[in-house]
View 1 (tube, one colour):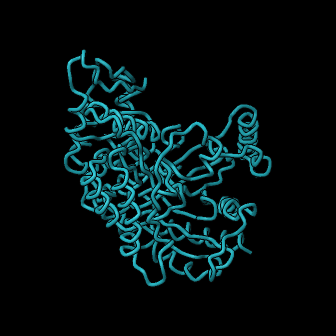
View 2 (cartoon, rainbow, N blue to C red; view 1 turned 90 degrees about the vertical axis):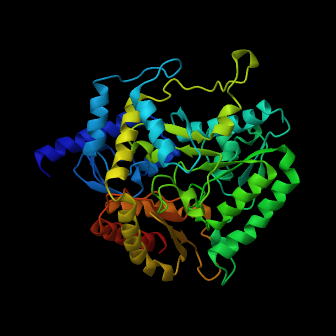
View 3 (cartoon, rainbow, N blue to C red; view 1 turned 30 degrees about the vertical axis):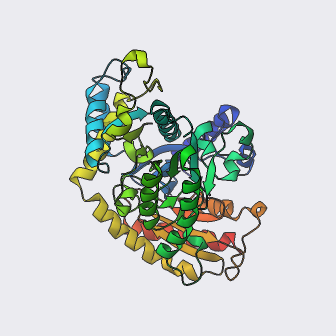
Amino acid sequence: MSTANRVASRDGVTLVARDLAHVWHPCTQMKDHEQLPPVPVRSADGCWLEDYDGRRYLDAISSWWVNLFGHRHPAINAAVVAQLQQCEHVLLAGFTHEPAVALAEELARIAPTGLTRCFFADNGSAAVEVALKMSFHYWQNRSLPRKRRFVALSGSYHGETLGALAVGNVELYRRVYAPLLMDVLTAPSPDCYERERGESWAEHSRRRFEDMRALLERHADEIAAVIVEPLVQCAGGMRMYDPVYLSLLREACDRCEVHLIADEIAVGFGRTGTLFACEQAGITPDLLCLSKGLTGGYLPLSAVLAGERIYEAFYAEYAAQRAFLHSHSYTGNPLACAAARATLRLFATTPVIEDNRRLAAHLAARLAPLAGHPHVAEVRQTGMIAAVELVRDRTTRAPWPGEERRGWAVHREALARGVLLRPLGEVVYFMPPYVITETQIDFMVDVATAAIDAACA
């Protein structure tokens, strides 16, 4: 090792020591870092992260699903720098600015038809909180106070704040906090992993919808909204279903006078093969939650899009006390809005969706051999999201005992080989940046296959 590398290595070790003295990491059992210290990232470029020793890691999960066009993209960099010379932040109560107005206009233009109003927040969980409160408050303003309950799908995930956690259904996240959470109604997920032998995704999704239909009809007078992740339940294990479920849900919500909230925080902006997942069902939700890829992974920002009918329920004289008073200090931050506008320009000026479809097909072809692996129950994919379900016995689909942490073993082995994978339990998934090449996909899949072999040995 050269002198320069030895210095870099010492810098990395020092940074990790400083980190472990003060930083409490998200979604982490900190004691695990006794075995696997956090990776100290010195720089990032395109699909790659680089540590202080010069080792590179392919970012196969887009740094928690946010980085669409690679790290340090020159166009997004330039937009943020230019905005920094004008205005870094101003409150959005009683004031406005070009980046927020222009972004709201652009989102209204590209969103499903009829979503004309944009309410900004600063992260995905906050967007879900806004949507839940907006739906509840709408029915209060409409003098229908009984409509105050929410419906969610089993296996769903919508964030970590208390309202978002309440409408989620992943026990790992919500179990401890259950006494703090509002009561929600839960319908069975249309998760196609559970389909019968010989049953198509569409047939299974239609069959599972009957439970949702019955629940809505039984409780219509007390339900404010249904919230779903369109097509892919991401944090719940990359569970996937057919667009027909969304079509049926839209019809049922209309019939029962219930709002439909589409949480496209993870699946929006091209992840599923269309700009928004809802497009594949040809529907418009009443409220659309966006975040993550909205800024290309640069800065925290989220948005809730609504139509005029919901907006008008809050529009009144001050004395009526009908205003929506939810707020965040950094609502509509100009720097974040500038990054988001630059991200949307990339969609407008380059064939992102077409390129993604080509890359998704290559990823599917490379993953196909894993379907015959003795410890793989299923390989599934929707657009640029792919998942491999690991099991102890593929014939019976018996899972590995959770305490064996086979997914974590995949993470460790892949990291040692230069790929950042972060399995959800025993589900190994891929959500790479859209600038990934076919050669990099080959490397990513080869490393994942070797890591799965090692973890399941």
